[in-house]
Image 1 (cartoon, helix red, strand yellow):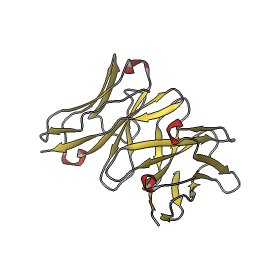
Image 2 (cartoon, chains in turn cyan, green):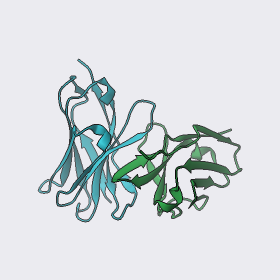
Image 3 (spheres, chains in turn brown, yellow):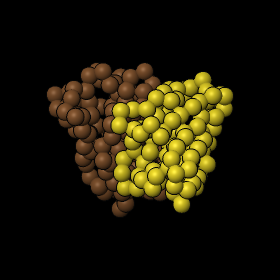
Image 4 (cartoon, rainbow over the protein chains, first blue to last red):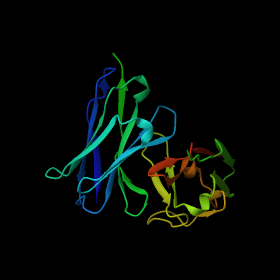
Length: 118
Length: 106
C-alpha cells in the first residue's frame, strides 16, 4: 500500500525559503504525477504544482515562479521549495499522488502545518 | 481565469439525498473530480472522471457533469458524510479546486 509522508520545518521566517520533502513508500514513483497542495487555515485547497517521474514539472502560475518541485529518485522522494515566503504562505501542505491523464490525486500524505513568522 | 463555484454550505437530514453543485463555464467539457475532507484529515477522492467511484467509496456517492454544472449526489445521507467537499478540474495547464461546500447532516 502506497503511503506518503511530508517532512520539514514547521516554522519558517519571512523572506526565507520553505522546504518540504515527501517520502513515498510502498511503491515506485514511476508513471505517476507527484504534487503539492496547500490549504490555508479554514480555507480551501490550492494546487501548487507537480512533477512527473523523470522530472517534468508543472506549476500553478499564481505562485509567480516562487515554487520549485524536484525529485530524488534514489530515495523515492520529491520536494517542494517555496521562496520569499510571507505570512500568507502559512498553511497545511499536503503531498499527493496524481494519476496520469488528468486523473485525481488518489493518495495523500497526512499534511504538515507550516507557519511563517519571525 | 477559470472559476469554479460551489455553494458554501448544504444541509440535509439523515437518510435524505444531498446534492452539491460545482459551476463553471462549459464545465461539462472538462474532466472533473470530487473530494471529501473530514475535519483534520487529508482529502479523499470520492468521484473521479465525472462519475466514477474509486474502490471503497459507497454506491451512495454518484456524480454527473454536463453543461455549466457538475453535481455530486449523496443518497441516504449518514452522519459520517458530514465533511467539506471540493470539486477539481484541469484548465489551462492548471489544476483548480472549487471553494468547497460544507455538508451538514441535521
